[in-house]
Length: 281
Image (tube, rainbow, N blue to C red):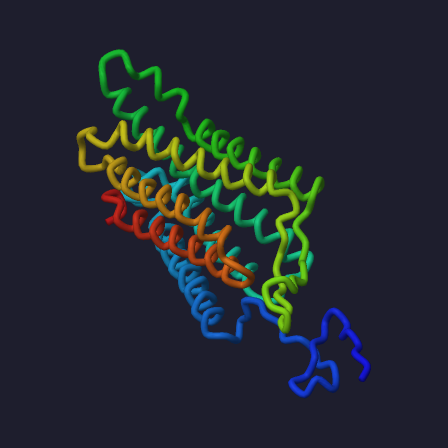
């Protein structure tokens, strides 16, 4: 004869005579999807570590030195970080994981794309220097300039992430709107503008890398990696365009799964492109 509302985290029992805790939902390490994503992430990290070990062991050989070894080492490290950052999207969201996941994802991705962008610029500079009167262009692409360009481009993303975290930091959230009898744990991005700027900056660098590699795709010589970079960055941009609507329209843990799929897919593709480089085949 008397009805009582259950507390927020509880739901009525099937008999409607007591309140029972609501089920919780998040991308867990113990469910099949979480296990598959974790395995793929660790496998990619292992491959990067093996390739990095091979590069380090043969670092003094002409083959590795001709492949712009410093940028190659940095690219492998950034790929390794990208694989590892996907683990932050698995497990029950906490304040530090919500804050770290997108910052780590954004910075490591920009570091990776910056290395590819600089490698493309070096290819253009080398072939331009091979023409009469073009030797002056190489002085702008020495080892110091390459390191400086990667550092500046990555620092811009770090500044974006810092401003985002300070102004409106991502935080864990208990969402009860998707299901009445279930609590969906998720990370709200805080500032949508900050998240959009982070993604937009990665997309801008990817498009710029693609355009430069496209311009250099028909340059001669067997050591021209611009064709591979063009194809890789075309796939990168295609996945990036597909990721945004899929992420926005995926509820709860599936949004995290979509983001992890995008990260792992892009990194396996980048790693495969690096292994197919004629310089290291």
